[in-house]
Length: 359
Image (cartoon, rainbow, N blue to C red; front, side):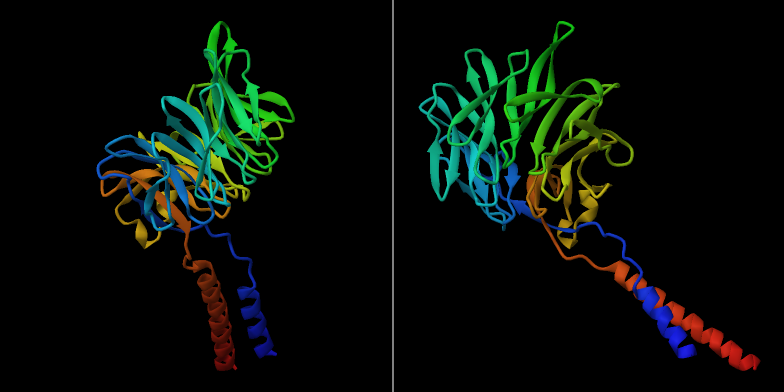
């Protein structure tokens, strides 16, 4: 009888539901294109391939990085890569003979999209469609491309640009509006031919940065005190995401299909790379394994479908670009449960001994 009681205590303890553990990451330095020259990462895919741009001694070039941090220039002349999907297709822009072209890279081939207007791509979807902006006369319009260039236009101002697109050709970005005689920027949500104003969190302006395949958009919006607050936008509702404890401002830059959101929080005048996941907010610096020695992650600029993250920070005091890839983490919850179980067994045995002695 007592043996069954002890066994049942152990089984019950081990069967207690485990608390969801935060992710942990290995950090990799993304090499600059040229020593001492500015380099900027902009996006990442699930294979850990990253893209961006880098300066060399001649020009700014579009670049890509392998998952080990090695860098390669992918534009022969001036260019920037702004996004990459899981198939390895890349979107951005290049300049040839003084003309700027929205540009796609795929399978080692660079395609400049012919147009009478200066254009750029800022995002690419999983199915290879791209979004960005073009110059029409003196105005800048938001665009998306699915083999044909579509001009989304702008609100009642003269300036708009698209910064995110999903597999359903839902596009987000920002557009100028005229309010009380002043020009302000508002986040827009374009779907099925309709361009909707996402509004703000009580302040004058908002900017949308990204959207996932569930149609959830993220960005930054000013509150009544004009401070920027990270937001998510779903079903026509803008939600303030908050930030790290003590933050004065925050910004949500990218979201994946798992609902993981990355960006930054400003705390005491310092920016800290931030992850929003399952209703929790994490400082990415606190989630690094032993590879994080010397790093201070300041912002997160992209996240892949499987949770790889890119951004900028400092490495031993030098501005640097980084790649985070999910890494195995200790399982303290499991060990804690075992300790609880063994503790319960020990308590039962001690009680048994007391009963025997008393007898």
